[in-house]
Length: 225
Image (cartoon, rainbow, N blue to C red; front, side):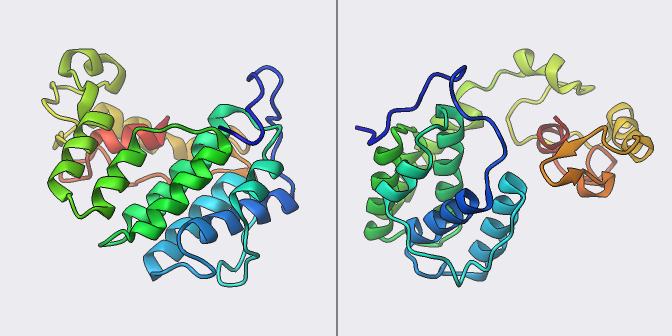
């Protein structure tokens, strides 16, 4: 049970986090993932980038305070369910970057999720991996991720692809119309696309997406939105 239940979305705090809140959130990532330091360089790069994108602040992830689940819940007591879910999702991303997930790390994830009142199916995925059941984890991911509710017909309109994608990871080799939309971002006026911290630069979007030989059109579409 959550220490501080999430308020309704219309009563929750949706303002950008303060530096103090951002520091606590960053510390919770390191603590949840085995702290006081993250385990791999990939974790450091990934969590640093996500933290800066989410909060507008950047911290040295090797110099963060230890944050307990109760500390984080107290800091986020006025944040709604979507905000809390995203915090847990970042922790899950950090865990999935490891080749092997220790059972102690899985226990940390569950404690933080419980304190925030988050019940996410993807916690089952990391639990399977911590148990060494990689085949079962793959099934969990297929059920809980893109493939669980994939429908070529249902997604055709929203993705704007020129041909149906039979799976969530299919690639459309040549999509000139959507490629043109990406290119048009270079002509956006300042402030049209905004992330906390300032306007996004067009080059931050995947430049090769939707061009022949480029990355998955689905992945690029998610970034574009």
